Structure formats: structure tokens, C-alpha cells
Length: 243
Length: 280
Image 1 (tube, rainbow over the protein chains, first blue to last red):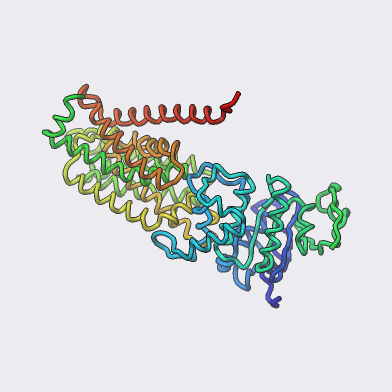
Image 2 (image 1 turned 180 degrees about the vertical axis):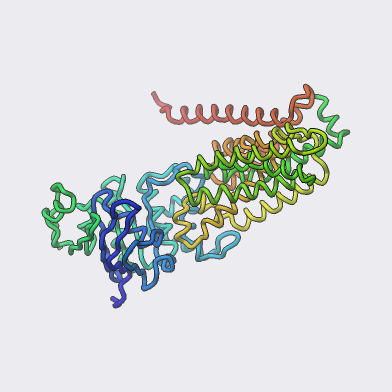
């Protein structure tokens, strides 16, 4: 584990013009960490992601990713957005979408190189969608679509993988498989998963950051019903698990 | 209609018209497909109508209206693109305003143009039968530019249309490619104004791609099919309008719309048949 954290937020505040969406948030994510970011809807999770990705500038505080301003570190980040935001009838194949991960790494003009296709194939194999390469987007299930977006992020060979609500609208069995996949990926890259589903996330991640405008971190083992009650304002069903 | 093939062989203006239709279809197939998948028909309509401003100014100054159209289309595309990038929440209001302001400028300048009153109708509804040889060369040049740009930056345009945010994160200069795409839309609009005029442009820009998209599911396939459909619509419209002496631009649009609605019906029936279980 290197001394330099992968992501460092120091006293970051942000507002969209009204009340603060993030208030004095400080967070460090270490190399190879598997961090779960949880919190209620509207708690600032997406805002925090956009700041780490360099899509939003904080009003106050400092942000670095791999020791650099986020916008300069983007090449090292694999981003998996929420799949509900996509037009499912867009005329593309799975392979075409996965290849988009090579943008910025491959040549500027014309088609993709052979090496790009090889990397896309490897990413599709890793996410178990290699047999879907020629399939059209409108024929995919929710879980398959999600895997395609993960493969697209992996194709860019990231050192930090950021996933926004990867388990939204996916059936439970698929969800288990997807977290097993994240754990395997975590062996070679840092993983940040955003989820509102605290019950699931705690089984896999090494640390949980609870965000509701302000941020509190817990080792997974220390999560109790009281902490969750503080965060969400209501008791949440807990899953017993040991580490 | 039976007289059309014979007339086509003997009349150079019909040959020019047919060739103009074919040239316009290439730009229309390539760029119309992007307009369709990116859902920017309204934006393309704004560019098309704002073009009248440039044509009016060019007429007033005594230069070629098509040159004025080209300049006005590019300015309108960049202006509208800039507006949608910066003030997205007012996008439809501002596009609507530019749409009307362009036309108003055009009408004012045309009314101030000395000499005989020019035919406003041919700007608005096109005049495919009046295409000159030099205009054909210009259309061919515009096609070459469009094909080159699309060929070189196909994957960037695809990324910007499918997932702008991801493209930005991959280091693609999204704003640049978005504006470049709109400039290509502007060039295509100028191509099509020759054929159907600026009011009917939107239909010819989107209907071939929309028809193709009902049955094809790759963007390249849609582009190829939309190009062929564009040729069928312009050529067919020309032939249909020749005998009864109908306005050609309007006939082309009605043919394109008729084919689209029939195709929609066919698509809906096919989908219903697929959904129904074959075994009772």
C-alpha cells in the first residue's frame, strides 16, 4: 500500500446555489481499498462522485486523485454510471459500447486498433458477457446491461473503479454475482461503490463512508443499527455478518 | 408518370434534379442518422429556419444566396450549440427564438432588396428543378466534407451521442465534437434546402433515418439505408410530381412520410405478432 492516497478530499463543501449539498467532507481512499459510499437519496452521493470525477468544482476544500487535480486523473478512472439513465433503443452492439472505453487511449481518427478489440474482449470475458458481444442493447436484461457498462470501464484499464448504484433494479442473484466480480477486481484496483443499499454493501466492502451532507466513516465491522438509524433517520433491517 | 423516363433522358434540368437528390441523400443519410439517434430534430429545425436570415442578407448584398445560406447555417449551428451547452434549461425557448429571429431577418432584408421581387417560395419550399451545374459541384463538395468528417470521427460522434458524460471522462473534447456535429447538420441543411426548401428540411433529415431505424439496429446500417431511402424519396418524388406538375419538394416529403407511416404500421404489426404466443 503506497503512502499517497488514491483519492483525497480535504474539507470539501459544495452547493448547487442553494443549501450545502456537501459540508466539510474529508475522505481518503487508500490504494486497493474497497470503499462503500452509502447514504439516503439527496444525501450528496452523486455530487461527491462528480467532484471526484472532476465534473464539478468544489466551492471550498481541496480534491486530488492520484495526487493530481481530478480532471487530469480521469484517464486512470473507470466510471460505471447508473444504467437507468440510458436510451435502451440506441442502435449499438454490446461490443461497440465496450469499445468506447478505449477512447482517449486509442488513435484519434478512424476505427479501433486490434489491441483495443483484444482489451474489449478480455473485459467482456471477465464480466461474463463475451457471448453477448454482437447483441443489441434493447435485447439485454438489466443485469447484462450493467455488466456491459462495467466492461466498458474495465476496457480503459483503470486504477480506480467508481460505480454509481450498480445494484439498482437488478435481481438478488445477479447482485451477489456482481459483488463477487467487484471483489475480484479489487485484487488489482481500488474500488468505490455508491449504493443506497447498506445491507448488501457491508458484506463486501472493507470500509463504509456514510454521507448525508456530512460524512462519517466506519469500518464495516463497527456498523450498528444505531449508526444506520442516525444516517437514515429510521431503523434499517440489518444483516448479521462476521468478518 | 410514364412520360418521366423519356423526359429524364432528354431534359438536362431533370438530370440535374435527380443528381441533386442523390447528392443530398448522402449528407441526409449520414447526418440525419445522428440527428435521429441524438434526438436533435428541433435543433436542426432551428438551424434550417435561421438560414433564411443569411439568404436574405446575401440577396440584399447581391451575392449568391447559397453562400449566405452556408454562412448563416454555420453561425446558427454554433450559436444554438453554444446556447444548449451553456443554458441548457432555456434550450427550447432559445432555439425557438433563434428560429423566428433568423426568419424575421431574412424577410426584412428580402423586402429591402432593390429590383424585382425574388421568389420567396423557392427558399421556403425548395426548387429542385432549378439546380445549376455549379450548385451540383458545391453539393458534391459538401458531401465530401461530411463523409470525411464522419469517417474520421465516427467513434467520437457515436460516444457523444450515446453517453456524453462518459465521453468527457475519457478525455474526448465533447463540446468540440458536439459543435462539429451541429456544423455538419448545418451543411446538410444547406444541401437539402436546394431540394425541399428550409421549411421541409426537417422531414427529409429525419424521416429516412427514422424509417431505417425501425428495422435496423446498427448506426452504420441505418446510415446506409437512410441514404438509399433518401435517393428513393427524392427520385420517386421527382417522378411522381412530373406528370401532374405538382410541387416537387412537397411531393418528396409526402412520399417520405407515407413510406414512414406504412413502415411504422408494418413494424407495429410485426411486434404484435412476435409478442403473441404461437401456441394457444
